[in-house]
Length: 319
Image (cartoon, rainbow, N blue to C red):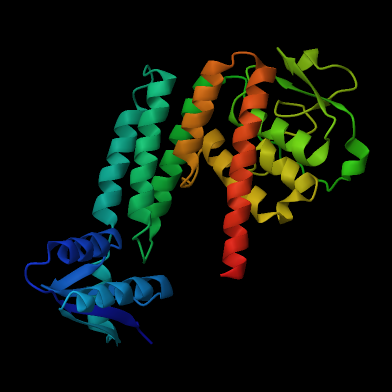
């Protein structure tokens, strides 16, 4: 059975520019199809039905009339309506921009990151209204991930390669008051992993920032470099491997933070918080050249992110 769909029919009051602007902005941000003036179409999904209902209430409160209707479609109409939501043209244009910009291999890393982040945000906006996703979305997502990885390889040529071995579940009790070692010049995955270790795994952890893997102290636990006990595995960055290794992947707030760290470190589907966290950590890195000082400053940022994500989860559970 095809559909169903939802249709908003709105006759807006004259002289109320605020309501007109609200309707225009909302239908545009939701990617609604315009069947004719004042008639808007979306697939029937709970969040979209709620948005249409709110718009209808706003129009009626301003003196207009509005109705939200459910509609089925026969095969021909279904195909026609789905075509109204085809994002192929947007993805094609975006893919061309990705390929053009990623070909500029001499572009400074900071500028390349900024350019990549801009296109990741454009992708998120398109994907957010791609209700009948096809191969185009996956192709663009992969192109962005490849470009992000290319940038990070240039920035950190000694970044560890992902390992294929399985992730073993470990006991936190066996990793207390230990020394942990990673490459100096901390950045996203390493500094986030160090915060995670000290906050959730080993409160008395001591850290050694090493110039190369061979310099790891004999009894230290290595992380985020080739040959380390904890490093990239099975498509996960070190932060995510630590979550899985110590049973912390049952914490929804830490999982959400892990998604952000993953997107910033190796790319993939953009997360809403990536640009903000990247900007704040970049600023902290510039203020604190010393790795230990940077970890202290960054830990405050991660503490705040974790608190915000935990509060959001608690609100959703009680809402």
